[in-house]
Length: 232
Ligand SMILES: Nc1ncnc2c1ncn2[C@@H]1O[C@H](COP(=O)(O)OP(=O)(O)OP(=O)(O)O)[C@@H](O)[C@H]1O
Image (cartoon, rainbow, N blue to C red; front, side, top):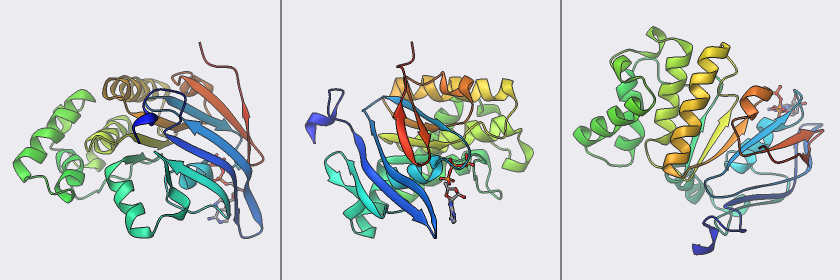
């Protein structure tokens, strides 16, 4: 849809999401919007439903009720095939522990989504190298995840999430396992690169210093969203 760029129409919108895991109601009517290019922090206490919200928005799990709309398409109603295509082409994800493939070098980890998308090997390596450069880890490109520091591995995971040029990156506690210096480096790299590429970011964090990198913050409490003041 052409009217999803920049203006008032959100790129991604969740309305009244309800999602239960067994008897636990993780989401109880949560609504949130993400605009194109926006960096939105979702904060809240442990167990408030942050990861469940991210999973619903990223099309990883379907809500029990409520809607998720991405660029005019109802994600929650899409057939699995179209959903996985969208996840592959339009979305990038980063989790607390980057989930890089341990047997592959940093370069191969980042090249992998491109190879899966049909990009030729040489071009995939070149583009992967450029993204590692942007995240300041080109020097580590031949290392495997176990040979890197936590911060280097997370910056590699970010490069992998962004290398295909997604419209949205979902980051679930991307700095949760890092010390404050590495955390600062990862957040600076993520926000700088996302702004440059015009990528929207949905950032889950329980850390106020990390949330301060976002354009806007919403807080989840007991599975619903309370809007906060817009960050300066
Ligand atoms: N797969 C699951 N099976 C059962 N219960 C679950 C599952 N996933 C989440 N829950 C429960 O749903 C509630 C919300 O969990 P969720 O992980 O979304 O919260 P969160 O805010 O991300 O928490 P944290 O900050 O601790 O990661 C919690 O009570 C959690 O125990």
